[in-house]
Amino acid sequence: MGLDMYLTAKRYVWNYKDEDKALQDQLDDVMKDDLAEGMRVKEVAVDALYWRKANHIHKWFVDNCQDGEDDCREYWVDAKQLVRLKDLCESVLLQKDVGLLPTADGFFFGSTDYDEWYWSEIEETVKGLEKVLKLDTGKWDFYYRASW
Image (cartoon, rainbow, N blue to C red; front, side):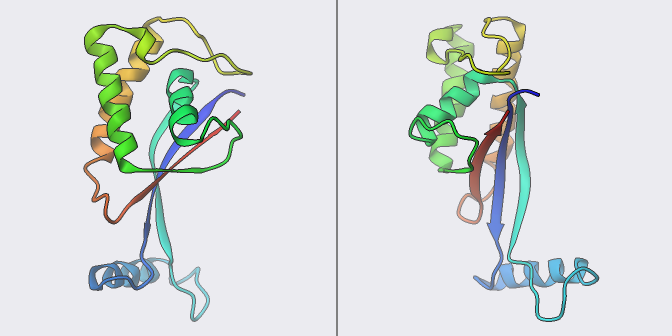
C-alpha cells in the first residue's frame, strides 16, 4: 500500500480530423479481433508519468489542480499547469529551497524528510514533464489521479 500517482495523456480519435480518422482506422485494425462490428476506438490513453509516494508532488496537484480535494478521483490538468510544475521543480533544484515545494503527510504517503528521495523525485518530475510536454497539447489532454 502507498501513495501511487498517475499522469495520463488521452487523445480522442473519434472522427475529428483526417489524421485522427487515419489513426482511428489503424487502431481499429489492431483491435479487430476484440471489437464487435460497428464498434470503433474512441480514445487512446497512455501512462505519461508515474510516481510512488512523492507526496510533495501530490500536494502540488491537490492544491493546484484539484481545488484542495484529495479524494482519489481523476482530475483534468491543463498543459500550462504542467509547465508551471516543471518550472517550479526546476526552481526548487536551482535554489535548493524546499519551501517552494513542501512535503505533505498522509496515510501511507511516505517520508516527509527532505532527503535524496525528495530531490530525486523532483529531478525525475522535470525529466518526465519535459517528455510529456513534447506531445502536441492541442491533441492530448492530461489527467492526474492518485490512490492509496
